[in-house]
Amino acid sequence: MGILSDKDILDGLKAGYLGISDYNDRSLTPNGYDLRIAEISVRGDPEVKKEGTVTIPPRTMFYVSTIERVKMPSDVCAQLWLRTTWIRRGVIGAFGKIDAGFEGTLTLGAYNATDDPVELPIGERFCQMVFETLSSGTLKDYAQRSGNYQGQTGVTLEPVKK
Image 1 (cartoon, rainbow, N blue to C red):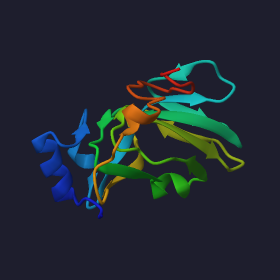
Image 2: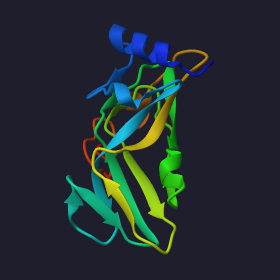
Image 3: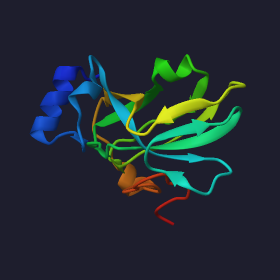
Image 4: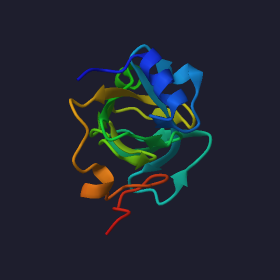
């Protein structure tokens, strides 16, 4: 069990073992990959923003979907970490793990914990995905277990699979 390096990630992508659509070299880190913002949905606003810069009001929950679509093999999962750029501006992230076997874009919950608005540009790097190898492949991967959000695209708040 270990964390994949930048070399491991590139080798995995070239071999088709890992999947990251719309890959961007700028997003590769020494031990992960920075996921970029495709859409933002601000709680209380029915419009999902897909371009420009979105202003998040103070003390407000919001959701981000990723540009990248990820495809995880059955023996790799990933942690998600909010980039410190956003932490320093008062954003708090509520992230889970990306399960082995998951495929789709990601919907990430976050909160502007400050008394000031925060501006988030569409296309900006938002969080780092850190790949972890499992000690063995799964008996049943995400798609075979619940798969509630398998194949999701864009900000997705309700399960895809019901």
